[in-house]
Figure 1 (cartoon, rainbow, N blue to C red):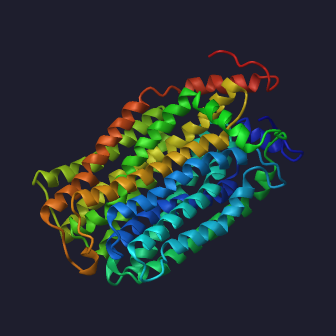
Figure 2 (figure 1 turned 60 degrees about the horizontal axis):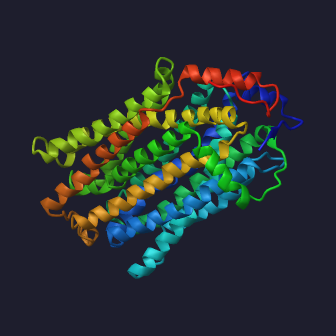
Figure 3 (figure 1 turned 90 degrees about the vertical axis):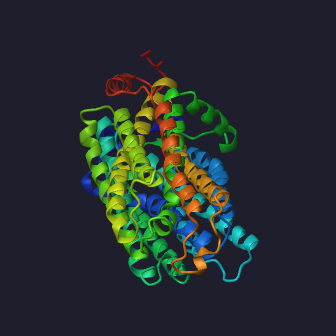
Length: 494
């Protein structure tokens, strides 16, 4: 695929070459689109898992399997959308058309996810959840894959790319915070998370917030996106060219390392996050109205991590920032949980609120570092890809990162559901307010909530250790691309 500038795109080409980045206003409009992912499945999946497994009584393994069915759809949808958006030609550019089409689909699927018809049997409830899981993930993919690829196109500068990711991450955090606060303060304030009648209103309200944010993103960037370089006409159909394109991106060792490490990291995160509500309610015995304050502590840490990542990156390599972030996540999953398992520290009720807040604050900082560094490194890897293969593949690269995130969280959800059944977690606890599982079940819950994700995260660190794009290497790649007289010129050896 070759790119050519549109007639209106001279100024935007400067941005791609690192000469001038997007304005603050453009970055703000762009950042609102992150609500689709962060406010959608990332925030909603925890509520969904608790709703279907505890409130509606669907066995945990079935809930995990239904939510993980979206994994199979993402395996097909993400690369298809990535390649499609790489090669679209329109007056709105190559990224906005699928993003716009995804807005009503995302809104409907998220709302319906929280509104199953009453009285469904377990098989029908499983089918409803699985269908809406596939629909929701596919719709969010249609928006998010071209959205993150557009972010890589807004600037070619090594540091400016991190700034764009920071804007995006902050907006994602705030949208997730708004939806979380809406749930705990409005829909689950009386009766807590076990109040079944609060979930449909919560789901449709969350869907409305996503719709507004996604629409504002597309409207705010319509002129900028339309003026970015567009591809030449592609003779081959999507089905014929996609296998070769996938083979090409996996031929880049940097992409492989980022992809595999991200998958393993997000499996650990998904496993832990899915069981947050279970652990807070049934082990630490916190009231539902207090759980939101743990979320706020996490968000405060996340904002600190996101805001601090560029400053740390100015002194350290992006790879180091990721390793620091993973270390903080591992500490969050081991210290308090390990102390509880050893019988050294086991507060409950109001006494557990402060330690849980501190724990979540540390986790937020770690996840903030990882959330900023991974996309920024993936953008750098697209430059390396162009240097090695003479073509840009932002759509497919960020489809890979999106797939790693969503699919791995899906695997984490599936593992959480299976693990709940393996430890004998009762299916009928949601029918009695204040009921607790036996102590041995609580012990199993803490193990799969903390130490198990930590072990998985250590594996991610070992995989990521050999990643090789440093600041110096990227500078050489960027210089080689600028000096290349024509797209067909052979890439110099680094």
